[in-house]
Length: 304
Ligand code: COA
Ligand code: ZN
Image 1 (cartoon, rainbow, N blue to C red):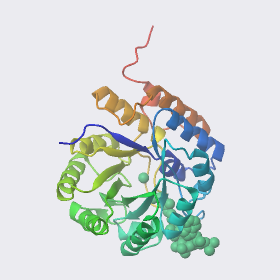
Image 2 (cartoon, helix red, strand yellow):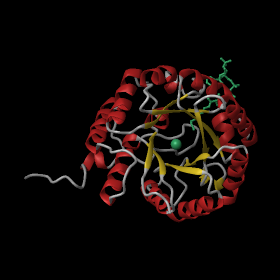
Image 3 (cartoon, protein in one colour):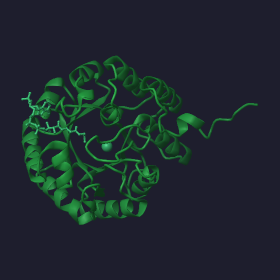
């Protein structure tokens, strides 16, 4: 029997901002992230420790972590390699999220490694953090398909998951980097993987590239997944995957689960999230894809 509670990780600071071409001032990033925290989100992937040549937007990673560090928060940073893990550890993050892709082509373009080289990095990082309080998560990009290689089936993903589990790593995020999943596929993947690997804690990181983000998320929930990534206003995407667009929108997910009566791990103030999303829209200077920020909650009655 699975717990019904939903656990959300906000990835606005990492997946969201990494896709923004114009420089966002560090203070503006912090204002947005603090708005999300103030609304009740307690797990934040706030930035990444990657090459500033690859993602110039996140070159202020150290300052972001230093400013947000707080005992009540779980601060996560994405890293692509050992060097990133060393920087992340020095900065005091609570969790290191190592990214690698199921697709050899995307992994090469994204982190300049083969999949097996990336796995070697993962095992070295696990050793590095072994004696620390920092935890480890692995995000597997392009799990449902890759723009360069096409669609995948669950067996391709299983082989990487098995190698991680054999090495004692059981927190695993499946990322649909360019929105190639559909609800039936998510349901089949997650039922199969949860049954096959009961020890693993799976999260879903879904992009709304083809308008199926929220239905895919619900399919994951109905298949027993309880951990999801999301970004405020639905911003984000991988700059090294053609056609990539935003994540499933944080406030739209919160709204959906609230309307359905599904409990969230922590109480979340939806209005504060919507206000922060509107503030972010002004900072970024374009219309964001989020829906509830435009229409308000279905629970709101408009007085005429
Ligand atoms: N953080 C900061 N700098 C890093 C770094 C890290 N994690 N890893 C490597 N570097 C630096 C090296 O010190 C070196 O610097 P130098 O040119 O001043 O000597 C330079 O980057 C090249 O190092 P190298 O190991 O040869 O890396 P690379 O050129 O093969 O690039 C990555 C590999 C992983 C560093 C790069 O592709 C990357 O940062 N990718 C991130 C992609 C990403 O974030 N995608 C979106 C999220 S899914
Ligand atoms: Zn993503």
